[in-house]
Structure formats: structure tokens, C-alpha cells
Length: 260
Image 1 (cartoon, helix red, strand yellow):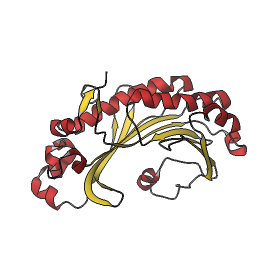
Image 2 (cartoon, one colour):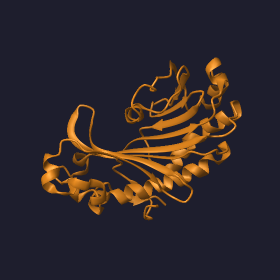
Image 3 (tube, rainbow, N blue to C red):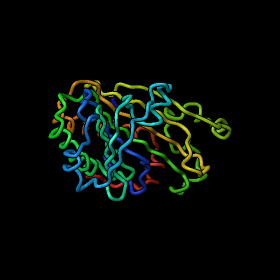
Image 4 (cartoon, rainbow, N blue to C red):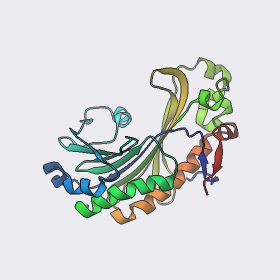
């Protein structure tokens, strides 16, 4: 299946809490056995801050909980983190994946620019044979109060296909928890998306928000030089999916402008 085409926009009131790109590859033992000094030199101008830690073992957790905690990680490996000066952009390198995470996503072209430096460093220093999984994850948190929609029910902001039972006002009023999980094939290239959505809160704020967490991925052997083209395709699908999830009132409240 595929989602309907929609105009590409940039929201002035951006609901994105976090965007994650993960590129997995066959394990490279050299990354565990020595400090990634050459890799750091290639990216240090943009990611000067460095931290090292043992990789968290998520193997014993239920799959859904492990996914919420963070990215899949290898047992007994080392995780190296390189962050921008303001901490808004973080690169993580392990013996099995390279990841880029940001809490300040603005537009796709900017994200690709930030990714290009560590991706090129990976190819130059470690030359993985291929990428086994390419993932692009968008976590949108819709907070009604910041959009001037505090008293507007979700049934006027999100599509009925997303809300399910919550489309009924009498159910929405009394609903305490709502979480849904769906795995879909999204196009003829066999790209897939894991969608988790439902009620959420942020930090200590008790306001009920709505999380739309879409993890797009491709699980097939891909040459590193073709990663960007695959990510372009996943990004396009992500924009169509999010627009399909929301109604015009929410779309307008986030103050869209033409991305082109």
C-alpha cells in the first residue's frame, strides 16, 4: 500500500520531538577493539564532544519495550557518541550500526547534510561491506496547548482511521490510555513502517499529548553509497503518512509553509 500524495511543507510549530536515522551493517570487530580516532578526526569539526560507554543490553526485555528504550544494540559491544557543540545532534557508532539523532529537526535537506559527514567517515575508515538495515524514525508529539487548541477534542484534529474508538466523544472523554501498534508495507520497494501511536505526556507536564511514532525501514543488502537514495524515499513516505494522520484543522494550527 502507499499513502496519498501531499504537498511537502515545513511546520513553523514543528511537532517533531526526535528524528533518528540508523544504518546497520555486519559487525566490525575493529570498532570494539580500538578507539575510533580516525573516525573522530573525520567528523570532529561538526561533532566535537565525545563520550564512550558499554552498550546497553536490551536482549532480555520484551521487543516492544526494548524498542521504546532505544535502538537495538549488540551485547558486549562499546558505544561511541559524538555530539555537536549544542548537543542537539548526536552520532552514535557501535560495531553494528551508525546512528544520527536530533531534537532540532527542521527540514530533510539539513538532516542529510548532518548525516553525510559521519556516513562518509564510516565508509572511509571502516568500509562496511554493505548495510543490512536502513531506518528512519520520526517521533511527532502533538501538544494542543502550544497550538492554541487546548480544548479541542482529538476527534477534530486526527483522522478517524487513526483514532478508532476515540472518534466517539464519550469514549475520548473517559479514555485513560490508548496505544496502537501497526506494521505496514508501504510501497513496491517493500519498504516498511512500524507505527506506534496514542496518548503520551512529556516530562513532568500532565497535559495529554498524542504521539505518532513512525519507524520506516528497509531490511536488505544495500551499498553504503546508495543509503541516501533509500533515505530520500523513506522521508517522502513519512511526510505522506503524517499528513494522512491529521485533519486540516491541526495541519493549519501548526502553520505550514511550502517546503519548496
